Length: 429
Image (cartoon, rainbow, N blue to C red; front, side, top):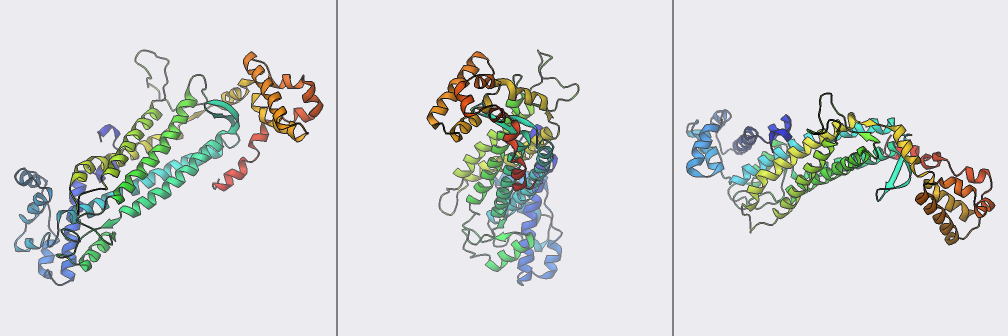
Protein backbone atom coordinates (compact mmCIF):
# COMPACT_ATOMS: atom_id res chain seq x y z
CA UNK A 1 0.00 0.00 0.00
CA UNK A 2 1.31 3.46 -0.84
CA UNK A 3 2.26 5.71 2.07
CA UNK A 4 -0.64 8.06 1.33
CA UNK A 5 -3.10 5.38 2.41
CA UNK A 6 -1.05 3.85 5.24
CA UNK A 7 -1.41 4.78 8.90
CA UNK A 8 1.70 4.38 11.09
CA UNK A 9 0.57 1.62 13.49
CA UNK A 10 -0.80 -0.65 10.76
CA UNK A 11 2.21 0.11 8.58
CA UNK A 12 4.46 -1.05 11.40
CA UNK A 13 2.57 -4.34 11.71
CA UNK A 14 3.36 -5.13 8.07
CA UNK A 15 6.91 -3.78 8.00
CA UNK A 16 9.86 -6.03 7.18
CA UNK A 17 11.18 -5.53 10.71
CA UNK A 18 7.87 -6.66 12.22
CA UNK A 19 7.82 -9.73 9.99
CA UNK A 20 11.37 -10.76 10.90
CA UNK A 21 10.80 -9.98 14.58
CA UNK A 22 7.92 -12.43 14.54
CA UNK A 23 9.94 -15.03 12.62
CA UNK A 24 12.60 -14.75 15.30
CA UNK A 25 9.97 -15.01 18.04
CA UNK A 26 8.72 -18.25 16.52
CA UNK A 27 12.23 -19.69 16.11
CA UNK A 28 13.08 -18.88 19.72
CA UNK A 29 9.77 -20.24 20.97
CA UNK A 30 10.59 -23.52 19.21
CA UNK A 31 14.03 -23.56 20.82
CA UNK A 32 12.46 -22.96 24.23
CA UNK A 33 10.09 -25.87 23.60
CA UNK A 34 12.95 -28.15 22.61
CA UNK A 35 14.81 -27.07 25.74
CA UNK A 36 11.81 -27.87 27.92
CA UNK A 37 11.70 -31.30 26.27
CA UNK A 38 15.37 -31.83 27.14
CA UNK A 39 16.72 -31.68 23.59
CA UNK A 40 18.54 -28.35 23.75
CA UNK A 41 20.90 -27.95 26.72
CA UNK A 42 20.05 -25.06 29.04
CA UNK A 43 23.51 -23.59 28.53
CA UNK A 44 22.92 -23.40 24.79
CA UNK A 45 19.41 -22.03 25.33
CA UNK A 46 20.81 -19.18 27.40
CA UNK A 47 22.94 -18.16 24.40
CA UNK A 48 20.13 -18.68 21.89
CA UNK A 49 17.94 -16.17 23.73
CA UNK A 50 20.36 -13.48 22.54
CA UNK A 51 20.05 -14.51 18.89
CA UNK A 52 19.47 -11.68 16.42
CA UNK A 53 18.95 -11.40 12.69
CA UNK A 54 20.68 -8.91 10.42
CA UNK A 55 18.66 -7.22 7.67
CA UNK A 56 21.66 -6.44 5.50
CA UNK A 57 22.95 -10.01 5.69
CA UNK A 58 19.48 -11.37 4.91
CA UNK A 59 19.48 -9.36 1.69
CA UNK A 60 23.02 -10.44 0.80
CA UNK A 61 22.39 -14.12 1.46
CA UNK A 62 19.07 -14.00 -0.38
CA UNK A 63 20.81 -12.79 -3.53
CA UNK A 64 22.67 -16.11 -3.54
CA UNK A 65 20.14 -18.57 -2.10
CA UNK A 66 16.91 -17.01 -3.45
CA UNK A 67 15.18 -18.36 -0.34
CA UNK A 68 13.75 -16.11 2.38
CA UNK A 69 13.98 -18.53 5.28
CA UNK A 70 17.45 -19.79 4.44
CA UNK A 71 18.70 -16.22 4.29
CA UNK A 72 17.01 -15.41 7.58
CA UNK A 73 18.29 -18.40 9.55
CA UNK A 74 21.83 -18.06 8.19
CA UNK A 75 21.92 -14.40 9.19
CA UNK A 76 21.16 -15.62 12.73
CA UNK A 77 23.54 -18.56 12.92
CA UNK A 78 26.43 -16.47 11.60
CA UNK A 79 26.34 -14.54 14.89
CA UNK A 80 26.20 -17.66 17.07
CA UNK A 81 28.63 -20.37 18.03
CA UNK A 82 27.94 -24.13 18.11
CA UNK A 83 24.54 -23.46 19.70
CA UNK A 84 23.42 -22.12 16.32
CA UNK A 85 22.82 -25.69 15.18
CA UNK A 86 19.58 -25.73 17.17
CA UNK A 87 17.99 -22.91 15.16
CA UNK A 88 15.16 -24.20 12.90
CA UNK A 89 15.49 -27.70 14.35
CA UNK A 90 12.92 -30.03 12.77
CA UNK A 91 11.11 -27.17 11.07
CA UNK A 92 10.03 -26.31 7.57
CA UNK A 93 9.81 -22.71 6.40
CA UNK A 94 6.03 -22.56 6.69
CA UNK A 95 6.17 -23.54 10.36
CA UNK A 96 7.83 -20.20 10.99
CA UNK A 97 6.27 -18.08 8.24
CA UNK A 98 2.67 -19.12 8.75
CA UNK A 99 2.80 -18.94 12.53
CA UNK A 100 4.42 -15.51 12.35
CA UNK A 101 1.84 -14.42 9.78
CA UNK A 102 -0.87 -15.38 12.25
CA UNK A 103 0.76 -13.09 14.81
CA UNK A 104 0.70 -10.24 12.29
CA UNK A 105 -2.95 -10.84 11.42
CA UNK A 106 -3.94 -10.92 15.08
CA UNK A 107 -2.10 -7.65 15.69
CA UNK A 108 -3.75 -6.11 12.62
CA UNK A 109 -7.17 -7.35 13.71
CA UNK A 110 -6.76 -5.69 17.11
CA UNK A 111 -6.06 -2.35 15.42
CA UNK A 112 -9.09 -2.79 13.17
CA UNK A 113 -11.29 -3.62 16.15
CA UNK A 114 -10.17 -0.38 17.78
CA UNK A 115 -11.06 1.43 14.55
CA UNK A 116 -14.54 -0.09 14.54
CA UNK A 117 -15.05 0.90 18.16
CA UNK A 118 -14.14 4.50 17.35
CA UNK A 119 -16.60 4.55 14.45
CA UNK A 120 -19.34 3.00 16.60
CA UNK A 121 -18.84 5.62 19.30
CA UNK A 122 -19.03 8.41 16.73
CA UNK A 123 -22.19 7.03 15.14
CA UNK A 124 -23.78 6.57 18.54
CA UNK A 125 -23.19 10.21 19.47
CA UNK A 126 -24.51 11.50 16.15
CA UNK A 127 -27.53 9.18 16.16
CA UNK A 128 -28.62 10.36 19.60
CA UNK A 129 -28.12 14.00 18.57
CA UNK A 130 -30.36 13.56 15.54
CA UNK A 131 -32.83 11.07 16.96
CA UNK A 132 -35.75 13.40 16.19
CA UNK A 133 -34.34 15.16 13.14
CA UNK A 134 -36.92 14.62 10.42
CA UNK A 135 -35.53 13.70 7.02
CA UNK A 136 -36.79 12.21 3.79
CA UNK A 137 -36.66 8.46 3.38
CA UNK A 138 -35.95 7.47 -0.20
CA UNK A 139 -36.36 4.25 -2.14
CA UNK A 140 -35.01 3.95 -5.69
CA UNK A 141 -33.65 7.45 -5.06
CA UNK A 142 -37.24 8.77 -4.97
CA UNK A 143 -39.05 10.27 -1.98
CA UNK A 144 -40.87 7.55 -0.03
CA UNK A 145 -41.89 8.49 3.53
CA UNK A 146 -40.22 10.58 6.22
CA UNK A 147 -37.81 9.03 8.65
CA UNK A 148 -35.39 10.27 11.29
CA UNK A 149 -31.77 11.07 10.43
CA UNK A 150 -30.87 9.54 13.76
CA UNK A 151 -32.65 6.34 12.77
CA UNK A 152 -30.54 6.19 9.60
CA UNK A 153 -27.43 6.45 11.77
CA UNK A 154 -28.73 3.88 14.26
CA UNK A 155 -29.06 1.49 11.32
CA UNK A 156 -25.41 2.07 10.48
CA UNK A 157 -24.39 1.60 14.11
CA UNK A 158 -26.14 -1.76 14.28
CA UNK A 159 -24.34 -2.83 11.10
CA UNK A 160 -20.97 -1.75 12.50
CA UNK A 161 -21.65 -3.86 15.60
CA UNK A 162 -22.32 -6.90 13.39
CA UNK A 163 -19.12 -6.28 11.47
CA UNK A 164 -17.21 -6.13 14.74
CA UNK A 165 -18.59 -9.53 15.71
CA UNK A 166 -17.51 -10.90 12.34
CA UNK A 167 -14.01 -9.49 12.76
CA UNK A 168 -13.71 -11.06 16.21
CA UNK A 169 -14.54 -14.42 14.63
CA UNK A 170 -12.10 -13.83 11.77
CA UNK A 171 -9.39 -12.96 14.28
CA UNK A 172 -10.09 -16.21 16.09
CA UNK A 173 -9.88 -18.09 12.79
CA UNK A 174 -6.34 -16.88 12.04
CA UNK A 175 -5.05 -16.93 15.64
CA UNK A 176 -3.51 -20.37 15.19
CA UNK A 177 0.01 -21.67 14.86
CA UNK A 178 1.46 -24.61 12.98
CA UNK A 179 4.70 -26.37 13.93
CA UNK A 180 4.25 -29.79 12.36
CA UNK A 181 7.10 -30.19 9.90
CA UNK A 182 7.41 -30.63 6.17
CA UNK A 183 3.96 -32.04 5.33
CA UNK A 184 2.25 -31.75 8.68
CA UNK A 185 2.99 -35.24 10.01
CA UNK A 186 5.07 -34.10 13.03
CA UNK A 187 7.74 -36.57 11.92
CA UNK A 188 10.53 -34.13 12.81
CA UNK A 189 8.82 -32.03 15.47
CA UNK A 190 6.38 -33.50 17.96
CA UNK A 191 2.86 -32.27 18.72
CA UNK A 192 4.01 -31.47 22.25
CA UNK A 193 6.60 -29.02 20.87
CA UNK A 194 3.91 -27.43 18.71
CA UNK A 195 1.63 -27.04 21.72
CA UNK A 196 4.38 -25.45 23.80
CA UNK A 197 5.24 -23.02 21.00
CA UNK A 198 1.69 -21.90 20.38
CA UNK A 199 1.00 -21.49 24.07
CA UNK A 200 4.09 -19.30 24.44
CA UNK A 201 3.03 -17.16 21.46
CA UNK A 202 -0.59 -16.81 22.58
CA UNK A 203 -2.00 -18.80 19.67
CA UNK A 204 -4.20 -21.85 19.41
CA UNK A 205 -2.81 -24.96 17.73
CA UNK A 206 -4.15 -25.72 14.27
CA UNK A 207 -5.60 -29.18 15.04
CA UNK A 208 -4.30 -30.59 11.77
CA UNK A 209 -2.15 -29.03 9.07
CA UNK A 210 -0.33 -29.88 5.92
CA UNK A 211 2.86 -27.96 5.21
CA UNK A 212 0.82 -24.81 5.78
CA UNK A 213 -2.00 -23.39 7.82
CA UNK A 214 -5.03 -23.85 5.61
CA UNK A 215 -5.97 -20.78 3.60
CA UNK A 216 -9.70 -20.88 4.29
CA UNK A 217 -8.70 -19.15 7.53
CA UNK A 218 -7.00 -16.31 5.69
CA UNK A 219 -9.86 -16.09 3.21
CA UNK A 220 -12.25 -15.71 6.16
CA UNK A 221 -10.16 -12.79 7.39
CA UNK A 222 -9.97 -11.01 4.03
CA UNK A 223 -13.65 -11.64 3.29
CA UNK A 224 -14.47 -10.06 6.63
CA UNK A 225 -12.33 -7.07 5.73
CA UNK A 226 -14.23 -6.84 2.46
CA UNK A 227 -17.55 -6.99 4.32
CA UNK A 228 -16.51 -4.17 6.63
CA UNK A 229 -15.37 -2.16 3.61
CA UNK A 230 -18.69 -2.86 1.88
CA UNK A 231 -20.53 -1.32 4.82
CA UNK A 232 -18.25 1.70 4.74
CA UNK A 233 -18.90 2.07 1.02
CA UNK A 234 -22.63 1.90 1.69
CA UNK A 235 -22.43 4.62 4.35
CA UNK A 236 -20.11 6.77 2.26
CA UNK A 237 -22.36 6.48 -0.79
CA UNK A 238 -25.26 7.79 1.29
CA UNK A 239 -23.23 10.79 2.39
CA UNK A 240 -22.24 11.46 -1.21
CA UNK A 241 -25.87 11.40 -2.34
CA UNK A 242 -27.02 13.62 0.51
CA UNK A 243 -24.26 16.13 -0.32
CA UNK A 244 -25.44 16.63 -3.91
CA UNK A 245 -26.32 20.25 -4.59
CA UNK A 246 -29.98 19.42 -5.26
CA UNK A 247 -30.24 17.62 -1.91
CA UNK A 248 -27.60 19.20 0.40
CA UNK A 249 -28.79 17.65 3.63
CA UNK A 250 -25.28 16.85 4.88
CA UNK A 251 -21.77 17.82 3.90
CA UNK A 252 -18.32 16.41 4.54
CA UNK A 253 -15.99 18.54 6.65
CA UNK A 254 -14.20 21.07 4.46
CA UNK A 255 -11.10 22.65 5.97
CA UNK A 256 -10.13 26.29 5.67
CA UNK A 257 -7.84 26.71 2.69
CA UNK A 258 -8.96 23.43 1.11
CA UNK A 259 -9.86 23.49 -2.59
CA UNK A 260 -12.41 21.33 -4.34
CA UNK A 261 -11.43 22.11 -7.92
CA UNK A 262 -8.48 23.67 -9.69
CA UNK A 263 -10.90 25.34 -12.09
CA UNK A 264 -14.05 26.12 -10.07
CA UNK A 265 -13.44 27.91 -6.76
CA UNK A 266 -16.96 27.24 -5.49
CA UNK A 267 -16.60 23.46 -5.43
CA UNK A 268 -16.87 21.47 -2.19
CA UNK A 269 -16.80 17.88 -3.32
CA UNK A 270 -17.40 14.71 -1.27
CA UNK A 271 -13.88 13.57 -2.03
CA UNK A 272 -13.30 11.83 1.29
CA UNK A 273 -16.29 9.55 0.96
CA UNK A 274 -15.43 8.99 -2.69
CA UNK A 275 -12.00 7.80 -1.55
CA UNK A 276 -13.66 5.44 0.93
CA UNK A 277 -15.69 3.96 -1.92
CA UNK A 278 -12.65 3.58 -4.15
CA UNK A 279 -10.53 1.76 -1.59
CA UNK A 280 -13.48 -0.45 -0.61
CA UNK A 281 -13.43 -1.73 -4.19
CA UNK A 282 -9.75 -2.58 -3.81
CA UNK A 283 -10.39 -4.63 -0.68
CA UNK A 284 -13.32 -6.40 -2.33
CA UNK A 285 -10.99 -7.45 -5.14
CA UNK A 286 -8.53 -8.89 -2.63
CA UNK A 287 -11.33 -11.10 -1.30
CA UNK A 288 -11.51 -12.86 -4.66
CA UNK A 289 -7.77 -13.55 -4.58
CA UNK A 290 -8.01 -14.84 -1.01
CA UNK A 291 -10.68 -17.30 -2.06
CA UNK A 292 -8.55 -18.50 -4.95
CA UNK A 293 -5.66 -19.08 -2.53
CA UNK A 294 -7.62 -21.77 -0.70
CA UNK A 295 -7.11 -24.43 -3.37
CA UNK A 296 -3.45 -25.47 -3.50
CA UNK A 297 -1.77 -28.58 -4.87
CA UNK A 298 -1.52 -31.54 -2.48
CA UNK A 299 0.09 -30.56 0.85
CA UNK A 300 0.89 -27.14 -0.60
CA UNK A 301 2.34 -25.14 -3.41
CA UNK A 302 3.37 -21.48 -3.22
CA UNK A 303 0.92 -19.95 -5.67
CA UNK A 304 -0.73 -18.28 -2.67
CA UNK A 305 2.48 -16.79 -1.32
CA UNK A 306 3.13 -14.06 -3.88
CA UNK A 307 -0.50 -12.94 -3.77
CA UNK A 308 -0.58 -12.84 0.03
CA UNK A 309 2.44 -10.55 0.15
CA UNK A 310 0.12 -7.97 -1.43
CA UNK A 311 -3.44 -8.74 -0.40
CA UNK A 312 -2.99 -9.29 3.35
CA UNK A 313 -1.03 -6.12 4.13
CA UNK A 314 -3.01 -4.04 1.64
CA UNK A 315 -6.41 -5.23 2.86
CA UNK A 316 -5.46 -4.37 6.44
CA UNK A 317 -3.82 -1.06 5.55
CA UNK A 318 -6.65 0.07 3.29
CA UNK A 319 -9.37 -0.92 5.75
CA UNK A 320 -7.56 0.76 8.64
CA UNK A 321 -7.26 3.90 6.52
CA UNK A 322 -10.86 4.13 5.38
CA UNK A 323 -12.24 3.26 8.81
CA UNK A 324 -10.32 6.17 10.26
CA UNK A 325 -11.22 8.42 7.35
CA UNK A 326 -14.94 7.72 7.54
CA UNK A 327 -14.92 8.15 11.32
CA UNK A 328 -13.35 11.56 10.74
CA UNK A 329 -16.03 12.41 8.20
CA UNK A 330 -18.78 11.55 10.65
CA UNK A 331 -17.15 13.46 13.49
CA UNK A 332 -17.01 16.58 11.34
CA UNK A 333 -20.21 16.01 9.37
CA UNK A 334 -22.27 19.13 8.72
CA UNK A 335 -25.97 18.32 9.08
CA UNK A 336 -28.66 20.68 7.76
CA UNK A 337 -32.01 19.92 9.48
CA UNK A 338 -33.76 22.92 7.88
CA UNK A 339 -32.82 21.68 4.42
CA UNK A 340 -34.01 18.20 5.37
CA UNK A 341 -37.40 19.64 6.32
CA UNK A 342 -37.56 21.61 3.07
CA UNK A 343 -36.91 18.42 1.11
CA UNK A 344 -39.65 16.62 3.04
CA UNK A 345 -42.03 19.35 1.88
CA UNK A 346 -40.69 19.34 -1.67
CA UNK A 347 -43.53 17.16 -2.99
CA UNK A 348 -46.24 19.13 -1.17
CA UNK A 349 -47.69 16.38 0.98
CA UNK A 350 -47.27 13.40 -1.35
CA UNK A 351 -45.52 11.56 1.46
CA UNK A 352 -48.93 11.13 3.14
CA UNK A 353 -50.33 8.99 0.30
CA UNK A 354 -50.08 5.69 2.21
CA UNK A 355 -51.67 7.19 5.34
CA UNK A 356 -54.65 8.37 3.30
CA UNK A 357 -54.90 5.01 1.53
CA UNK A 358 -54.96 3.09 4.81
CA UNK A 359 -57.44 5.50 6.39
CA UNK A 360 -59.86 5.13 3.47
CA UNK A 361 -59.61 1.34 3.70
CA UNK A 362 -60.27 1.48 7.44
CA UNK A 363 -63.35 3.62 6.77
CA UNK A 364 -64.82 0.95 4.50
CA UNK A 365 -63.57 1.75 0.99
CA UNK A 366 -62.31 -1.21 -1.06
CA UNK A 367 -58.51 -1.23 -1.20
CA UNK A 368 -58.39 -1.21 -5.00
CA UNK A 369 -60.77 1.72 -5.19
CA UNK A 370 -58.86 3.60 -2.50
CA UNK A 371 -55.53 2.92 -4.18
CA UNK A 372 -56.75 4.16 -7.56
CA UNK A 373 -58.24 7.30 -6.01
CA UNK A 374 -55.12 8.21 -4.05
CA UNK A 375 -52.79 7.38 -6.93
CA UNK A 376 -54.83 9.54 -9.33
CA UNK A 377 -54.59 12.53 -7.02
CA UNK A 378 -50.91 11.84 -6.30
CA UNK A 379 -49.96 11.80 -9.97
CA UNK A 380 -51.98 14.92 -10.64
CA UNK A 381 -50.31 16.77 -7.76
CA UNK A 382 -46.85 15.57 -8.79
CA UNK A 383 -47.21 16.40 -12.49
CA UNK A 384 -48.83 19.80 -11.95
CA UNK A 385 -46.84 20.89 -8.91
CA UNK A 386 -49.98 21.11 -6.75
CA UNK A 387 -50.46 20.48 -3.05
CA UNK A 388 -51.63 16.91 -2.55
CA UNK A 389 -53.40 17.83 0.68
CA UNK A 390 -55.48 20.54 -1.00
CA UNK A 391 -56.57 18.14 -3.73
CA UNK A 392 -57.73 15.65 -1.10
CA UNK A 393 -59.61 18.31 0.80
CA UNK A 394 -61.61 19.15 -2.32
CA UNK A 395 -62.53 15.56 -3.21
CA UNK A 396 -66.14 14.65 -2.15
CA UNK A 397 -65.32 10.94 -1.89
CA UNK A 398 -62.45 11.65 0.49
CA UNK A 399 -64.48 14.13 2.55
CA UNK A 400 -67.32 11.64 2.85
CA UNK A 401 -65.02 9.05 4.41
CA UNK A 402 -62.62 11.41 6.18
CA UNK A 403 -64.47 14.57 7.22
CA UNK A 404 -62.72 17.58 8.79
CA UNK A 405 -60.18 16.66 11.43
CA UNK A 406 -60.15 13.00 10.40
CA UNK A 407 -58.35 14.02 7.24
CA UNK A 408 -56.21 16.75 8.80
CA UNK A 409 -54.97 14.36 11.48
CA UNK A 410 -53.36 12.29 8.74
CA UNK A 411 -51.00 15.13 7.80
CA UNK A 412 -48.79 14.73 10.86
CA UNK A 413 -45.08 14.03 10.41
CA UNK A 414 -44.85 12.78 13.98
CA UNK A 415 -46.70 9.65 12.85
CA UNK A 416 -43.59 8.45 11.01
CA UNK A 417 -41.18 8.80 13.91
CA UNK A 418 -43.32 7.76 16.85
CA UNK A 419 -41.52 4.42 17.30
CA UNK A 420 -37.98 5.72 16.86
CA UNK A 421 -37.41 5.54 20.62
CA UNK A 422 -38.27 1.85 20.70
CA UNK A 423 -35.91 1.10 17.81
CA UNK A 424 -33.14 3.06 19.53
CA UNK A 425 -33.64 0.95 22.64
CA UNK A 426 -33.14 -2.20 20.58
CA UNK A 427 -29.68 -1.06 19.52
CA UNK A 428 -28.75 0.16 23.00
CA UNK A 429 -29.29 3.87 22.44
